[in-house]
Image (cartoon, rainbow, N blue to C red; front, top):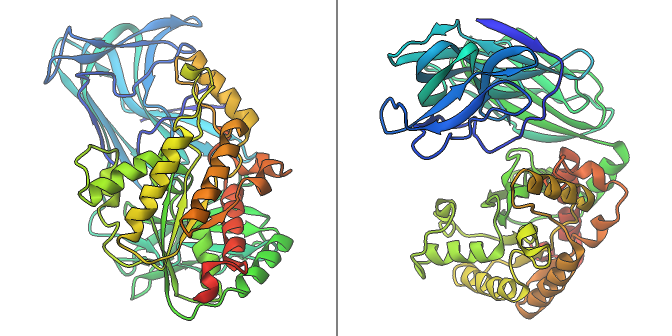
Length: 514
C-alpha cells in the first residue's frame, strides 16, 4: 500500500453514493458517478471500444496537469461510519500504462483541520487482457470521517474499466450494538457511561470519538467485553456544546452512539418544559416528513424529541420515522394511495410505506413543505415545485386516508425557515454546473403555503404548528444549517426538536389528554 497525504483542499462534490450498501456498476448507460475534475489530471468517458461483460466500459485517459501526466477519477466524497471496518474497491481493467485502485479518506489533524489521504494498491501493468485490480482499505485503527473510492493511472496511458465494485467487507461471526444510541447532555457535564454489547465475549474493542469542536480521539484496544459481551466507554472530560459521537469497533463490526451537548440555559429551559408532559399510557408516534428527518437517522430531531419525551415518561414514547428525502405532499399522497390499493402508480421509495398501517398510532405528525415550496431555474423562480391548489388537495386527501385507518390526532408542522442567502448561492452554483438550480425557503412561496396549511388544519380538525415565524429572523439561523442552507446541523436538529416539544407541551396540545 502506498499512502499520499494531502493538506490542500479540493472542491469535491458530495453525492448520494452510499457507504451502507455495496456499489456495483457495469457502465452500460453512464459512468456511475465516477468523475475526473478539471483541477487534476485525467478524463473519464463512456466507451464502446471495449467491455468486460456487456457492451460498454468507462475509459480513463491520462492528461497533463501542472507538469505531470496522470489520470485520476473518484466516486465523490461521502460521510462514512467505517471506523474499524474494511472496504474493498475493485474493477476489471485493460489498456496501456499502470493502474491502481484505492481510496481517498479524510481524518482530522491535531489543529482540527482535515487531512486528505490517498491509499492505493501496488500498481498493475496494463495490457490487452482484462485483469482484476483490487484494493482493501483497513480502518481498524483509523478515525476515518469521509471516503471517496479512487482509480489512478500514472504516466501516459489509458484504461478501460468495467465491473467496478465498492464493498464493505462483512465481519465474521461478531456484531456490536450500542445499548443506548442517543442522549442529550447538559454542557459542563461529562458523558455518562456509554454501554455497548459485543456478540463475542472477551473481544477487544476500539473506541473512536469525534466532536463538533474538530477534535478526535482513538483509544486502541481500550476494553475487553465481559462474560456477557458488554463493554462501556467512559470519558470524564467536561464537554463544550455540540455533538459527540462514539464508535465502538470489534472484529470488523461497529456501532455508534451520539450525544448532543446543550448549553446550560437552553438545557434547563427545555428540561422544565419536558417535565410538564406527563403521559398516562404509551405514546407511539407516526412521523411523515422529508430529508430533514430522513438524514442523520439515530441522532436527528425525531430522536431528540423522543429522548426529551421519554426523560420524564421512561420507556413510554416510540416513533416510527417514515420520512423520505425529497418528499412533497403530492408524492406522499401517491405513495399512500398505492399502499391502500387505490392506485397502481410507480412511486419513489414505495417500500417505505409497507408497514404504514401495520400497527396503531397515538399521534401522527406531518412535516413537509420544503420541497413543495422549492423553486427552480426552469421557471425563473416564479413558481413552486407543487402548486398551492395541488398541495391543498393532497393534504386533505392524505388526512382522509390516514383517518380511514387511525383515530390518532394529526399535527401539521409548517416548514422552518431555510438559510435563504446560502440556498440562493447554492442554486446559482448548481446552474453554473448544469444543474436544476433549486432554491429553498423563498418567502413568496412559504408564506402562502403556511397560510393554506393552517386553514387545512382548522378545516380538518388537525393541530397546526407554526415553525416558520420563530425561525425566519432568528439570530442563530446560520448555525442551524449545513453548507447547503437547507439541511440541519446538530444544533438545527435540536432547534427543531425544541419547537415541537414546546408545541406538545402547550395547553391545546393533543398530549394534554394523554
